[in-house]
Image 1 (cartoon, helix red, strand yellow):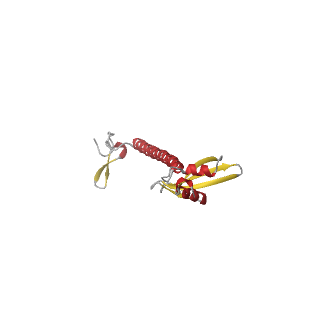
Image 2 (image 1 turned 90 degrees about the horizontal axis):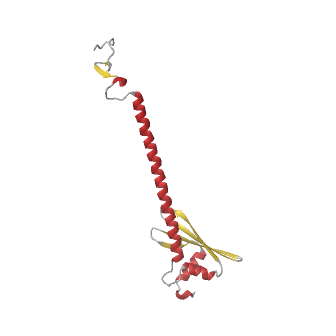
Image 3 (image 1 turned 180 degrees about the vertical axis):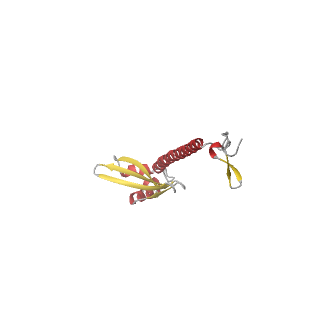
Length: 162
């Protein structure tokens, strides 16, 4: 093997300053440029795919947690009885006999676990809205408007007398 370049060998050597340096395309350990580019591209493809998969997974789990919070908060408000055997739903139904009740809820703060529950009582000629804020962390109900405050206050009187 000659070092002056007149002989073609499998590996070429070059003198740089005072040491021998392998060129990238002929180095026995370092991959050639197309192989290195393919590996780099595959790495980024896998990294992006895993990032997207993690984002989709976290979004799916957050949606599941939110729907469970909404369902549980609505059921908590509807069935809350204050220890006297009458639930909030019974009190609202008694105040609006023959009316149709519809319950829905929205997330007020996902970080703190606050859910707003709304009961809409519709009877001919009159619509009443009862709003309650539920703290899912401490499992407590707070009135969010005057009608909700009156309904919760009526739970404090046993037997329904005000």
